[in-house]
Image (tube, rainbow, N blue to C red):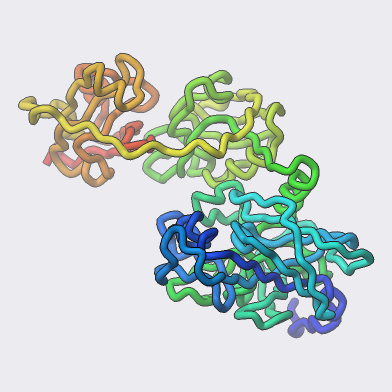
Length: 465
């Protein structure tokens, strides 16, 4: 039972000396080489996620120096904290990314030039080193035991105001923030965080650091009550790898996954919406070798429950390449186990440009299925351009009625499977769609551009309309 508000004065006095202000200086030329700004493109930060910089730092949308202009230097201000008495610090990758010089200012006003030992864009963690000894440092807490409702404290330099203290509670754990950081299960809090807080510690009531403040959800660029921190178990794993090998290695199994919707529960004969739905399996990947198929729902990894699709990447990414994992899956409502041997995540892999197949001529045939979908066969050249195998996939020429449109289907989409059955011709598509009853939901595995995902299509009442 809550009897009063906590007093954090002793905590702040004890841990404050281990928190540092960070100033990263970049020439205009260096900034231009990174695309003209020190923040990711807005397309990479959905739902108004923002990272923070201090006064004088680049602002998205603001004019930037032209390429090749050495011009005036730009500065970003962030926060960091000491993790050892011999001068190792942690901060955010985006605070020091591309910086020509990094300065660290301690609470006793001593200033040091810092060396960037290494940084990892995927986790947004950077390791710095200053030449000093007998320094105060923060002790690491167990971020995995955090629960919504617990008190937490942030110390940082918002707008350059050193050692500002804010407090709040944990709002949620295991949040997925954006595609760039799908291997980070963020801690969501309502602690006030602003520009300059980036890289600062999130502390529990014992004064242990449990996270690194990294992002906010905002449509104004300022604090709006939703902040995100990188869990310390993730950050320390990254830091240890950087200190030991100079790089970060993550495991992968070679699948793309999506959320299980309520419509999919019916379509795949599932007990509930838990798990990660396998939309695609990479050729030659550990998942393919282990017999994982599109339509499988991964429910656990080595006994750890996978409740949402966003749970899977952090669990797999934290495992070392070469290690094995036992996956609990559901296939057509039946429980199976598959053992996969992880390979190293290749972070240079990027999705190709979106590609769609336009039918050569509008198909004259009418749909003979309840879903109102008219297919068209692909030729060898089209399959080659799409990266498909021989006999794989059918293009959608037309969508008659509302069922397909409601599901999000478009002409030019490529249907790869109906349920778990591959389709590679119009006749095969019609055969499988013809099996769909009025009270059923059909699961279509669809390729659109570089993305592959299942869509749930439910027949209109009374058939096509």
